[in-house]
Length: 184
Image (cartoon, rainbow, N blue to C red; front, side, top):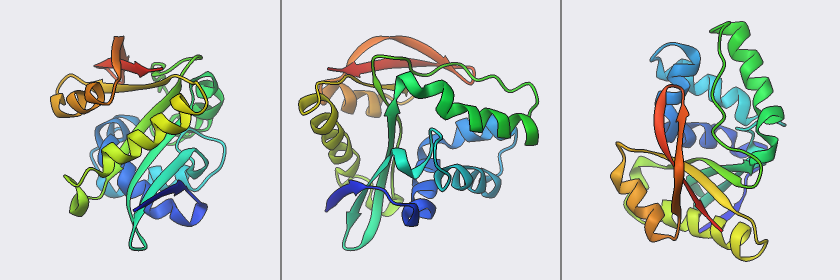
């Protein structure tokens, strides 16, 4: 398995994988529980540059020429300019009052979403993607990585803590209280 920077050609796979991780959030953005609408919403942004879900901010795990995992990560200081195209699109097409909370901030590279193909879950791919990011951002570049985890997802929290993340507080995202974890 290799982990590499994503390309625009990976967009359909990335959108499908990231949707697995953020389905409920995208449903809140678009105001409906429609998997097809959510996928095309996310695909639009994955294949478009300069936004938080862009392929430019993603890495993929590839095994035997199949993309089996994807992760989106970006500089928290860039949240507002990266989110602006999404907010504008949601306000124009779905919810004119859309105003999401800030899930990250300056001082951390934010792991927005990690998705692993259902056929490959339980094989450590998510852990390998996270270890890759820790090596790349924390070990080599002396940055802080941050992420949010739902309190209703204790297995993910356990993994993050095992990898060295520490709980630094809580944040609210689309009305859900999430734990904020970081590793430096």
